[in-house]
Length: 444
Ligand SMILES: N=C(N)NCCC[C@H](NC(=O)CCC(=O)O)C(=O)O
Image (tube, rainbow, N blue to C red; front, side, top):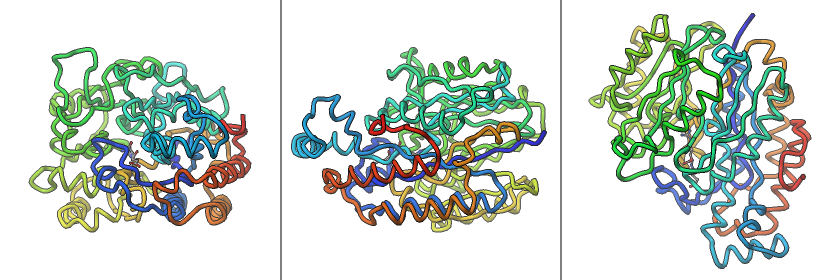
């Protein structure tokens, strides 16, 4: 049976804006108060996704969330009509309004952790939505994320959906951004790498001093148990706390893997050699560990350019390509490194650059925008086919964006009651286009 790795990209929602919500994420803080362009953001994402589909990859789209999140605003005591709720919160607690308006669900690498059926004891594909407890604006995502995932992967015979982990810092979970799977072929059992920032229950373990570690070992281990993984198929690796303090808020800002390739920065992990040895012991295949030295790419350059927030994909020809943001071309050290990489003896043979600047300015590169789901052909056939990107869906979604999205949005605009109406009208139509049913609070 054939097997593939599909990418499910987050469709950028109509309220995409820059509110400086993510302490520890340098781009988010630096670009706070920029005026955004939601229409351009959605189109940049769609272009990147369509280019992968055109390369012969299986490419899906995940719907955005309902924002402004009036349910959360009411839950914390704002009342009256929608317009009154917005007016009160804008006047008395604008930071809470910003948190309830972010389009952050676009970064679907944080939507969930996914374990393919080749790795799990019950032979099903497992999904656990990330609880994202470290950031208020992201902690309100998991319930709707779970509904969208269930509507997308909607056949219980193949797909097992778990609840998100308990909503406490001990179980801080950021999903696939801290999870990579190495394997020989997508359909063979692989080794799942869980990278965590700190051990919540061990006060003596290393942890960052300045910025938060968003993923805990306890959360990663809970996911491995829920997904019915064997100990021999898991490696738990601690992220280097020093790089978290330099803005590496998720592992996918410093490392990325695909099949038998692990591409990472020299300073990415703690106990690197021991962990690479463990991977070699647990995965019996030829492995390429591509380590980028600080002498060639400094951490600062990696964080600015998102060299490691690239997607490494296996093309239908069997060769691998890197999907990189144009920011990598604009950084001389990183561009030189990527050109050199193509001359090395690794499976990576091309680099393709995409402009995803609207997302990058909030700290989200190409890899943040996608959730990887390795599937066999039966599982692909069991996916909700209206979520898979082809020429028709691409044209339809672009027309939908043109009809409903604004081309400028500032945080001052978030209290505009018209934005609620625009956003709900757009999402209601989207659930019909993608045949998702009633996934949004306003539809229930
Ligand atoms: N690396 C991965 N996988 N994802 C990137 C997520 C970026 C996101 N930015 C934000 O949420 C910024 C929103 C704002 O400031 O308006 C975050 O920090 O969680």
